[in-house]
Structures are given as structure tokens and as C-alpha cells.
Amino acid sequence: MLELEVRAARLAATLDARPELGALWRRMVALSEAAASMSLEQFSIPESDILRPPLGLGTAKGEPQSARIAREIYRFMLRPGGLRSDPLGIFDRAVEATRITDVIDDGDGGYVYYPIDVEVDIWQSGRRIFAEQAPRILRHRPPPILGALAVARLASECMPDPHPLTERLIFIAAEHELRRDLVFSDPIVARRLDGLDQRVDANWVCPPALALARGGLRSWSLNRPEMREGLVQRLHGTLGRETGRLGPLQAWSDRLNEDFQSQTQRSRRADFANLVRQTPILNGAAVAQGLDCTERAARNFLEDATRAGHLRLLTQRRSYRLWAVPALADMIEERRENLGRLRSKEAELPAETVAQEHVQAKSQPMQKDEDFEARCAAILADIDKAMAGVDVLNEKYRKS
Image (cartoon, rainbow, N blue to C red):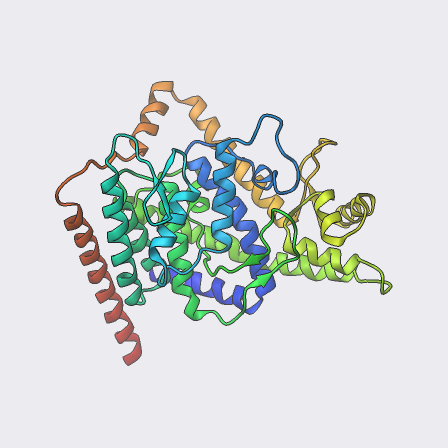
């Protein structure tokens, strides 16, 4: 665990030292994390479809609910918010972002899940416990990943049945919060484009769904020690890959600057380079809007960048053409290959075996019980023990 914390801290420091690179990396990873998070729940959403409505490419039959959820996950990750100052608001935002069923008004202007066959007062009790206890965990100032695991595990016990999508967002929000005191750069604000988020105000570096999806899908269940250990091991590999991606990404940015220098005062080439860094998936309409130019000029910019290797065409259809930063295109291809290998393995197994594995991956719904708060107290006791161990370790290094 300590080695993972050190690796994550180095990656976070690199991104903080180069805030524009950090904003671009987090936009790319947030897109892939949203798609991977949905794939863990058996929903297949291509990264290109997550930004499809904001890019002016609406679907003929309406937007699938899964695409809406993936886009809300992406937006949440760009600005997770303050878990210390507003734990109830973060909890409700995470639940609402991943909502699949109907919602009800909780009486205070917020919205929560309407759980099927589970009484609403369990939700209200869980929300109250989370709002009281999450700041208590953060006050310990635990190492970011350990603290994020603790807060996400608390959230899982505060919900009447498993909601992995929501729990992963709360994990991300908690890691973001615990790194805020270690960050010195300001949030990055991008060019204004309708439907696309301008501001990146995030400090997380650990994408849990990407870690679990690489090398074969693994279920998310923080209540089981072997699952927590598996997540930590997967995060090791994921952070190693993402750290290795930063050097080529910085070199790509430098080459983009060199090739798209403004040749005259009226030239928009430098503005186009900045727009590409701020928006890792683009189409002609988005470039035309961002640069206030014609769509023909926008297409010329995109084609010039593609020929120079600064962009890669994601879709070949004439009516639906999207370009992506090469690093993001590589991430999309990696995830697609991982899913392809997994499906090939499943195709070789008997149907009954695959169905049984999927059933076992799902946690059983939590029924209403009398020791709900006692179990949450037990989790906090475990967290206190873990933090005591961290304090001993820190004291040892201070003396040495």
C-alpha cells in the first residue's frame, strides 16, 4: 500500500507541476474511466459517444440512459467538489450522476435514489451517517488512497443495496479532497464551448474502473478484503502505465506548438493548438465554434493536424467524424482490446459458467436491519486502526 501511495504522489506532483498537461490527462482519463465504469456494470459505451450530444451529434431515437450516466460520471470527475465542506452534497451528486431509477425529493431540495422494495428511511439514515462520518475520516488526514478506500467503503454501508458506480465516484471525490492540500497550481479553464465543461478542478490520479477493467473485468466490492487487495494491485499497474504516458504526451504538446505557430496576427493556428489540448475529442463543429471560424476552415485545421500526427480520426463515417488526441485514441484502443480478449475467453466457456460468474460478482442487496449504525461504527474502528499503523510508520521515518 505504501508503494502505491508513493507512486500516486509522484504522478500527482508531476501533474501539479504542469497544470495544462494535468488538465489534458484528467480529461482523457475521465472519459476512459466513465466508459470503463459502465463496462464493469455490463453497459458498453464507446468514449466517442459520451461527448456525442455536447458535440452536436444527437441520436435519432433519443439518448440511451447509459450514455447519460457515463457523461455525468465524466463531468463529476472533472470537478468532484469539496467533500470536507459539503459531504451530503457530494453524496447526493454521486448518487444522482449514476441514477438509473426514478428519484424523489428528500424535502431539502436535494434528490436521492428511489430504491425499489427498500424503504426510503434507510436512504435518509445512510445519508445522515455519511455526512457525519466522512469528514471525521478526512480529519485524520490519511494517505489519499487509504482515505479514499475508507470513505468509499463507508458510503457502501450507507446505501441500502450495492451501487458500485456511485461508490467509485465517492472514492474519486475523496482522493481529490485528500490531495487538495498538496496542490499549488490553479484550476485550468478551457475555451467556452456549448455543452462541454470549461473548468478542470480535480486532483485525483487513481481511476478505479480502468484499473479493474484492464486485464479482465473484476467486480467492485470494498467489503471483501481480497477485492480491496485486488484493486490495490490493479492500481499499481495502471499508475505505472499512466506515468509512462506523460512523457510522450508532453512531447506531443511541444510538437503541436511548433507545428501550429501563428504565422500572422490573424492566424488561428496557435488558438487551434490550445483548443486541441483543452478538448481531447473534437469534431468540425466544435472547432468552428471554438475558433469562431467556418466549418471548412475547421476541417482544414483538423486534416492538417491529422496528417502531421497530432490527431487521429476515431470514426470513418462522413456524417459522424470525430478526432482524438493520439494518447486518448491509444487508451480507447487498449480498452477495446481488453474487452475483446475477455469476450473471447467467455465465448470459450459454457454459458452456465459465465452466468454463474456474473451472479457471484454481484453483492447481495443489504436488507434493513437494526445494527446498521453498528456496522458503520465497526468500519470507522477499522479505519482508526489503519491510521494508527500509518502514524507508527510516519514516526519511524521521522526518527530515522
